[in-house]
Amino acid sequence: MLKIALRKKIIFLFLFFGLLPFVIAFFLTIVQIQKSLKETRGSSLISLSSEVMGSVEKTVQSIYADVELLSANPLIRSNQVGNEEKLLELRKIQDFYGIFEDITLIDLDGNVIISTTYQYRGDWKNKQWYQEVKQGKSSMSPAHIILGPYKVILSTAAPVKNEEGKIIAVIAGQVNMEKIWETTDKIKVEEKGFAFIVNKEGRFVAYPEKEKILTLMSSPSFIKEVLSGDGGVTNYADENKQKMIGGVASFLEEKLIDQLGWKLIIAQPESEAFALVNTFQRQVIIIFLSGIVLLLIISYLLSNKIVVPIKKIITATKKIALGELGTQITIKTGDEVEELAESFNKMAIDLKKSRIVIEESKDVLEIRVAARTKELQELTKGLEEKVGERTKELQGQVDELERFRRLTVGRELKMLELKKELKNKK
Image (cartoon, rainbow, N blue to C red; front, side, top):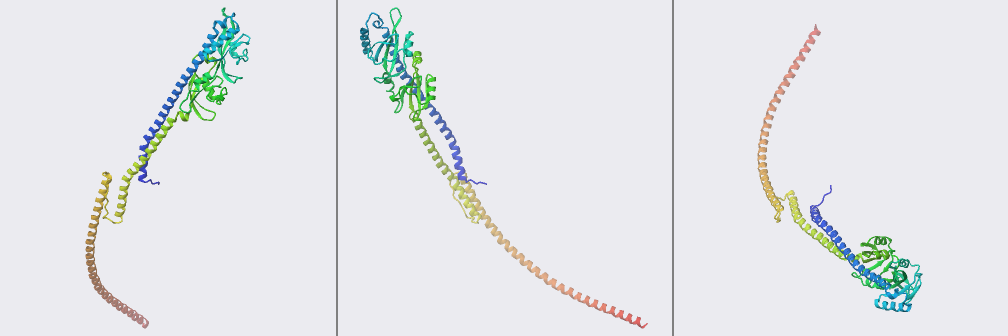
């Protein structure tokens, strides 16, 4: 059967019952605080992304409004005003707004009538948003690249109607995406957090690293998750397999949702976002380990207070067993162990007294036994002498009987011989 030392039992029980509530409290604290901090971080990212998206939405709406105002300009709508006068008016408006890099007037066949810079001519008639404008509603193009010079632009167009309400042309304002990037690029969350925008195809339309613009995100599951909802918290791994957390926000305007479908994400590495959680966990773990060490020390000292006196009692008991009845132990614990030691000392004293009494009784008994033995020896000697004398008497009687027997037997033999002789003589 396996024997476990009392010290180990005490330490184990003390640690078990001391650590059990501590461990439960530790894990509950870790889980609850971690959950609370993560929810707080997620909420702050959502709040920030909604705020930034609101600013982006205002910019886009102002572009819409400015282009619709352009389309309602009397000079642009008039058939009586020449193209040169209209071009002069467009340039004044471009300088006034300061947001358009080019304003172009296009006929219904997709041909450019006039342009303030002629840098964004392109193939108008095959653009879906251009066809939508021809149907009588304002529209906005997806963010796209133009060459010469290389830029990423956003085109907003509105129908130009004459006084009879007939669509006679399309006016388009070309906005450099840098106007949007000015809002997103300045967003910094701690050291590594940043903002970016993806379109409904999952391509970046705003990102701190401009070489990624209009490239497809590397995580299809993230694209699906982000594009399928209106907002919230999302978790994903970037191209470097770094775990990220992000707050997602969408446009509030239905028209912008349908046409652009942008999602703005304020992203931050989880290692940084949850640094406070990790710091808290480390601190709690340090406290937990310190508690274990403290409990070990206390349990060791407590076990010593119990085990050491018991060991003294065991050692004294062994001495008693070897006959050292004068053994005494001194234990000052102020508890039952001290009472046990006092009882042991009293027992040892009583045993010593009993030993003395036994030894004295033994001496008396030995004297009595010696005297009785002497008496028995003397009695035995007298009996032996009497037996000897009686034996001699009996031996004399036996000898007499033997002589008598012999004499009798001799007479009988002689009688037999006489009878035989008489018989022969006859």
